[in-house]
Image (cartoon, rainbow, N blue to C red; front, side):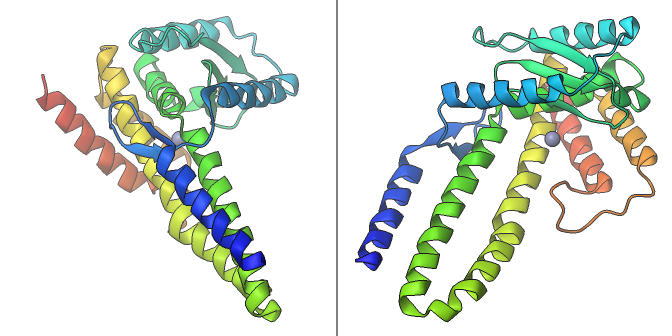
Length: 254
Ligand SMILES: [Zn+2]
């Protein structure tokens, strides 16, 4: 009975996977999507309020003005009336920014240590906006749901065949999916956000070479940090090389 349930679950998962696709704008890549846009906005809103509630809003008017100016210039190129863009600067020294489904963007003041002008700020903002319009966060949740479902089915099947093998199965499965699926997928999405971000910068008439300045600034700032081969982000060197390639392609399109 258990085996039959497992089989039904696997067939159902395959059916769901086959039916639920989303096409990323610009790159036109199809990705697995189990979350509706409504659920995505709900989760995004919850995460956004979670961060805002425990953060201190910045009172630096110059930086806030710069953020709004660059953010609105970039988002004016996106034709999506459902998105209600808002740019919020919070007091936090770490170099981080995030864009939530629905159009809320949070930027840490730490970003200004490496984003020294409008064009460089546009680089990180366009990358974060690219993640949001590509629905990468929801794709990540969808992927994890499927992997967890398969793991559950695998545990059932293993328990049915040999209960002593459940723990080795779980350990092998989790390490294998992390190294073989989860981290490579995140690296691919990071690269995709860089590519889409550069397209947005170009549409907004920003000088694309500023993206290289921004990433070089970040590389210098973090020069003491060692990069792990299987990290979720490519090394700065690889990233800068890929960005150069995309810039060359975009500049040849004129
Ligand atoms: Zn990213």
